[in-house]
Image 1 (tube, one colour):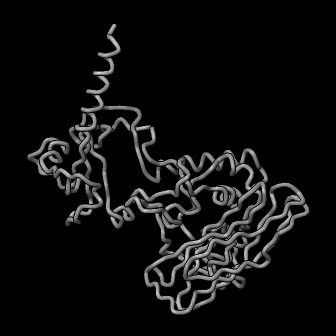
Image 2 (cartoon, rainbow, N blue to C red):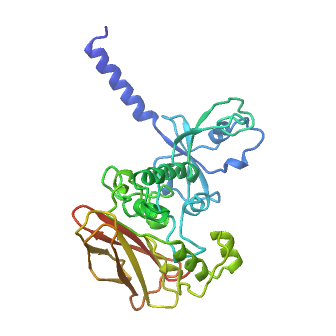
Image 3 (spheres, rainbow, N blue to C red):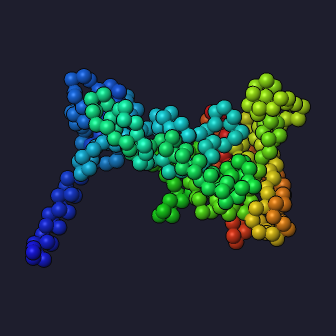
Amino acid sequence: MASPITIITLIFLFLLYSAEAKRTYIVRVKHSDKPESFSTHHDWYTSQLQSISTDPQSQSESESPLLYTYTTSFNGFSAFLDTDEAESLLSSRGPNTVTPEILKPDVIGPGVNILAGWSDAIGPTGLDKDSRRTQFNIMSGTSMSCPHISGLAGLLKAAHPEWSPSAIKSALMTTAYNLDNTNSPLRDAADNSLSNPHAHGSGHVDPQKALSPGLVYDISTEEYIRFLCSLDYTVDHIVAIVKRPSVNCSKKFSNPGQLNYPSFSVLFGGKRVVRYTREVTNVGAPNSVYKVVVNGAPSVGISVKPSKLSFRSVGEKKRYTVTFVSKKGVSLTNKAEFGSITWSNPQHQVRSPVAFSWNRF
């Protein structure tokens, strides 16, 4: 058995080695550009290493938008992308360029380094020369997050069979969190900046809180038809979508943002004032009272009427109206600001994120 002194010495040497060995390098190349002269990507990356002493973000920009970082203590590579490239590759990110009056994404969920099923038609690296075969692989992306969210929707439907799909979505959105496990604001993996609703929507899903959201924003099929009509789809297109023999667009929203959505996306365009009305349904306890808490944006004034909602019974519905006013002299072309509207009582925090833009993205 080794003596205490020997053990202490070995620990010291291990820590010393780890501190010296853990160096970070950067490779300014693209994965798809590997020359045929290199048998593996690892060999190619190693030949391109540039030692750095600070975070990759502090380095001067290069022509290649895709950066690979290499840390010797881990003996492996990880992708590091600049903001524009990351936004183009991650399909869940906003802003919503098709219907800017609807905030997207809705929520985020577990989707990074997920143990997932894998086809035996190709090796785990995806490279032609990788002859290994496995039934599982570690994967990341929207396709990994989607099954988690779908599973949560099934969980909520089992717990509340009477809830509509819109109510389930609302519960997931209004109870999502925006702080990590150190109680710090979520950060954007693209550039490590503070995340915002265009990246995380309402936040990261919280299954336990979603089971008891207090209030939900429900949407009927008729309301969705009015929404589609407001987007100027033809009647034939809408019939194909809703699977109904006849559709009448005589009643449609004057603005797509009038949909009873659990979040807000305010596009001012050439206007200074935008006003929306929402309806919430009490799925919590009877005799519940909620007060509004507004977290505004620097360039926008927000007023909510009424500021208090009282529910006598479960299933009761109440409406409120929000007025958004862009302050004078504001010029934020291709910029966005964010805030939130929360209906609060001691048991529940029903939070809706708000995104503001002055021009279409």
